[in-house]
Image (cartoon, rainbow, N blue to C red; front, side, top):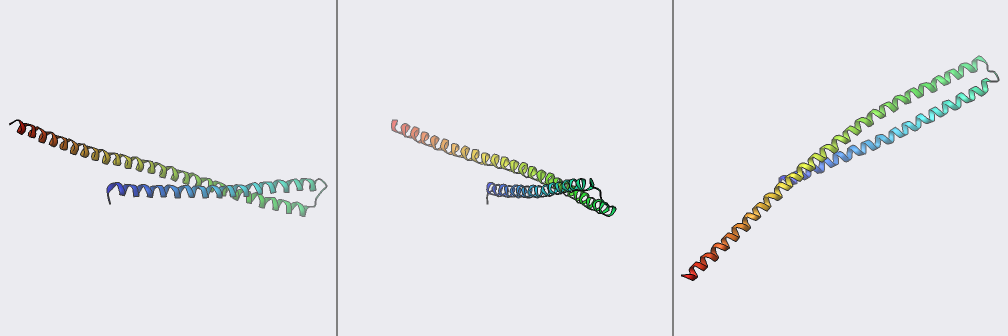
Length: 154
C-alpha cells in the first residue's frame, strides 16, 4: 500500500469519526428536546394546579386539603428541580459533543490538507520525472540527428 493510499484510509477513518460525533450530537439534541418538552409539561401542570387551587381556595378550604395541596406542590417543585438538573446535564453533554465534533472536523481538515499536499508533491515529482525523460529523449534525438548530419557531410 502506498503512502497516499494509507493517507486516504486515515482520512476515511477521520470522516467516520466526525460522522459518529455528529450522530451523537444529533441524538443528544433530540434527548434535550424531549427533556425540555417534559419540563414544559411540568411547568404547565404546576401552573394549572396553582390556578385550580386559587379558584378553590377563594371559597375556603379545610386544613387537611391545604396540607394535601402543599405536599402536592412540593412534589411538583421537586420534579421541576430534578428536570432542571436533567436539562443542565443534557446541555453539558451537548457542549462536550459539540467540542468533539469541532475537534473531529479540525482533524479531518488537517488530514485532508496534508493528503492534498502529499498528492501534489507526488504529482509534481511525476511531472518533473516526465519532463526529464522528455528532455533526455529530445536531446538523444537531437544528438542522433546532429551525428547523422555530420556523417552525411563527410
